[in-house]
Image (cartoon, rainbow, N blue to C red; front, side, top):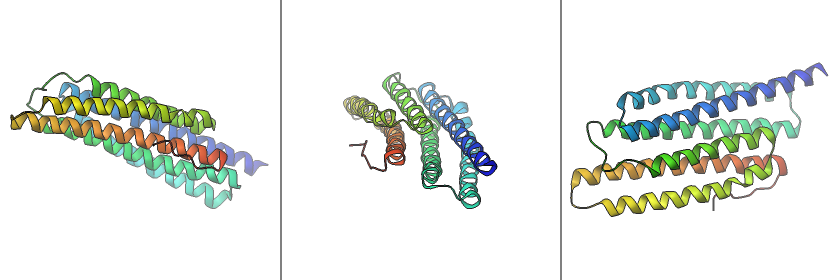
Length: 219
């Protein structure tokens, strides 16, 4: 009984660490997009530096997960939960990498003025942060319906992504410097679209974890 109690305590701590990591990753996305919108190189460099903390959290979650598997010999249902924690940590790490990618775009545009104020890209960032938080709640609450609802949210992100891409293409002309900046903004939008994809990946994993059935949320 004591072993099972200790195991579930450790499992709860693992999931808490995942939520903390997810909140930190969402903050990095927010910071990166804010740095781009303001062309704030200092904030962009801060975002890049803080990615090291995410790497450390990933390593700790992986270590704790493998220790639980090795020492506690979890039942099949608990093993799926731990395996999902490992997968989520990987997705979160990749999302953080995309925040770094966006911050690097800010640095590359240093000294320039934006062709026009960013409006849709920050909105897209808000949508992806919401998706990330919803995917993590679906995991901790074993909520299949919450996970499945990510498909609609992903559609919303994809629609906004298309609007952004079309708007940027319409702004392109013969000015090389302007076109180069616009291509960088295209990349930023692409990285946010990938963030949404990673969130739907987490949702798909939750559905499989709970039901044993695979469902594609990113179609």
